[in-house]
Amino acid sequence: MATAQETHEYPGELNDVPGWFWPLDQVLFSWFLERQERLDTRGDLLELGAYLGKSAILLGHRLRDGETLTVCDLFGAEPPDAANRAEAAKSYSSLTRQAFERNYLAFHHTLPKIVQAPSSAVVDEVVPGTCRFVHIDASHLYEHVEGDIGAAKELLVPDGIVVLDDFRSEHTPGVAVAAWEAVLNRGLRPVCLSSQKLYGTWGDPEPVREELIAALRGRDDIAVTVERAAGHRLVRTRAKGKRLRPPSLPSSRHPAPVPAPEAGGTQAAPVPDRTPQARPAARTARPSTPRDRTRRLALDLLPPVVTRAVRRYRAERRAKAGRTPGTAQSRP
Ligand SMILES: C[S@@+](CC[C@H](N)C(=O)[O-])C[C@H]1O[C@@H](n2cnc3c(N)ncnc32)[C@H](O)[C@@H]1O
Image (cartoon, rainbow, N blue to C red; front, side, top):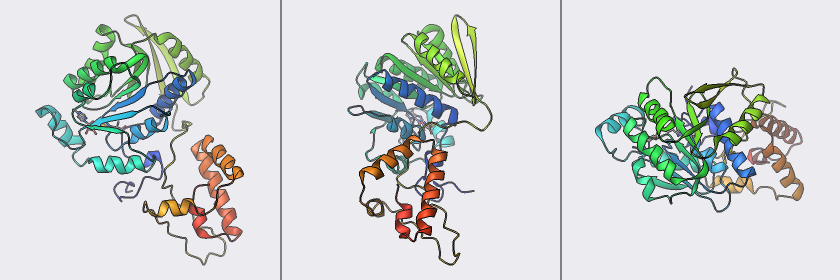
């Protein structure tokens, strides 16, 4: 089946955006960022390697007032060496900055700060000691990842979190070498491991690790095991089957249309106009009352699967009550 990107539609939800950001990591990113929010750890967010925006969109969802999200990616620009050029040609040949921006703006009103350059440029763009969360997911070649880890160390606040993508994938041995070298020789302390990513800190890992273990052991959809290696406590996390409870994800400004009501069966379903110009009109079709706003907030706090079911139910009720088709598209 064609993805939203292949048909050039706007992504209706985060998981419509192509990328390599799996549900367990969506849960873990959200947990780390929510904890920082709870503890009032201030700082900016940084992603090296954004591709079409899947993980960047979630990072943007967790930004607080006064904070900046910076993303650094080649977005089709010339890679700095032959090996990186081969990597880009193999995996990201059709990537454009425009496609990233289009996806990002489907979920957020403003773009992040974009550095379209090799990741080595990021130290000239971000002030040292200002980031609370850095996601390293650009080139997967050792020389690049080693440099990106050095940049993260310089840019993070003392208890900041760094995430290394593909630290143990069969096709990315360079990341594995750089990751474990950082753990053994460069002071990086692992907080936890998922199938794809290593989460670490150059601060004290113990409080955050303990809190994470307790939080995950309270869930029946994630398995946690702890073991020791070379003096480090390694917390392995694994999704149990496919029934992972998703975190609160950003809502698309172009949600998928609700299914047409069955009643009567003669009227064609309204075709949503998904052009950016059409959205503000659809969203202001009905004046927002305090009750509407409370209901919308409550909906935003529910797990997405419940939110979608509630929206579908309301749309069906509205259709049965003979309300205008346009409002069925607008977000409650
Ligand atoms: C694996 S993708 C990123 C996936 C994305 N974080 C996600 O969750 O979907 C890697 C990205 O790194 C970019 N990239 C590759 N080499 C790079 C380099 N030397 N500097 C900056 N970005 C690079 C590629 O253009 C590509 O978009």
